[in-house]
Image (cartoon, rainbow, N blue to C red; front, side, top):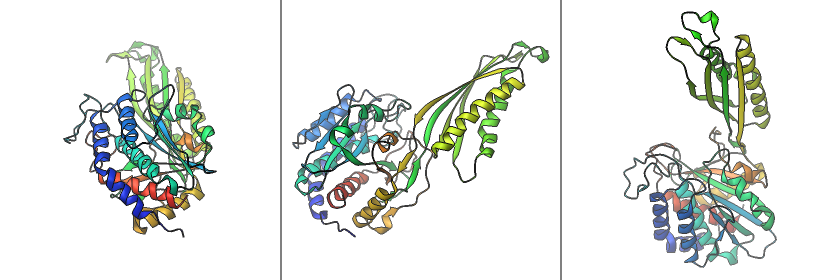
Length: 392
């Protein structure tokens, strides 16, 4: 077992930046920005880092950027934070609440960004101790599924240029206490695809339904089948979820409706299960529509892949976290979630670990009252700085 020998050094660096790090987070929180429009957020990060002499490189064709701490080592590792906010009207009542109407950091990305900035500052100051070069990515547009910023960041060639061998990321998690983390080997978060089914029937008077084809009835049969019956074709030990979130028609109370639009999401943890569900949704929807003399056009837009943690890295990270945070703080076999995350695309390029960081919010992610505890800022930087210094 390695020992967390850099504890004192990390503490001293954190003491120097703590107050300014809190101010950075609050400023980002008060000025939330949509994906691919995080110009102010990027500037705040850049200014914070440049005041400490940390070089910040902007992406060439979008917001965000990265810090590369080049220690002339043979290996490079990385960490990602996401910058964007959500289209939600904030109701936290915080003194640093959003000043942008209808826009809010309801998913903790303000915390993630400040954590990455703090981590970059601490590691830059202690770079002589590092045994690997470190890439810290400030990524835009995580919330823009299916065109999230991870793919665009990777198109910048950062993994190839810096030869990144392993990669890490975190997410605020309201269910855990401050200083606790949750993770697991294998699938941690689900793939997230958008489902669109257009049902076409034939109009008729409601009093003469035999002369028409009822798109609403067909849609109801399809919804029941895809949400419940397809699940019976999958092993109980596999995870798959289809949720219908929107049904729209152009009908009237006394007319057999000839058009219905169904929208939903498909969530899976296993890529093979995902492929099976995609195929069966198309088959079932079309066959049900045909049985009732209608038509169904199925569109499935691939979103984010499942976030799959590398087994060996996860074990090493959990061991390091136990040394840094304490054994009781590390929950290494948490249940996976069906929430999606574009961190998955980094995991396709290099072995990776993604984990949940406790922040003790009374409200869940994407709530208009979600407000993570600021103490999670320091604990997160403390964990990642200690890990990169002593366990890589």
